[in-house]
Amino acid sequence: MQVIEGDLIALTKSGQFDVMVHGCNCFCTMGAGIAKAIAAEFPEALNADRKTDEGSREKLGSYSVANVAFQDHSFHIVNAYTQFNFRGPQPRVSYEAVAEVFARIASEFAGLRIGYPLIGAGLAGGDWSIIAPSIDKALSGLDHTLVVLPGTTVPEVAQ
Image (cartoon, rainbow, N blue to C red; front, side):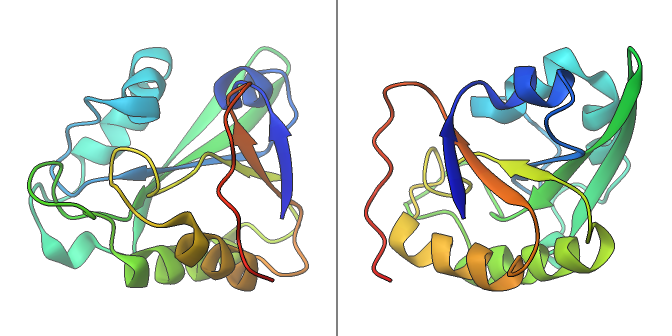
């Protein structure tokens, strides 16, 4: 897993990534964290989320996708359903859903440049030392990058 500092949305808009993945709950809200910023910048991502069954546990481990044309290039925004709810005790992330959704992403988006934030380790309260190996395993051999905001300390992950 490559790790860089920056703004995932700006980097994707500039053409650095073909696929931007972010974690979502299953209630079609996109009302906090990077999901809120993505929904504001790219309403098509929120529309893709809203086309799914609101509140369905069956969404865990799956995703919706918005295909975005921006200036002279295009990219995919993947709304990865990695947590059921946005309320309640933490962790709200489903580690199984993270592993499952990234396996699906690897299959569908192989050969593309994939960027993502600390999925499941922010507002969802998950343990990055559990999440990161799942992502690395699923995306093994692919071009994928963790993008963290400048000054963010990336939690240690045992190798």
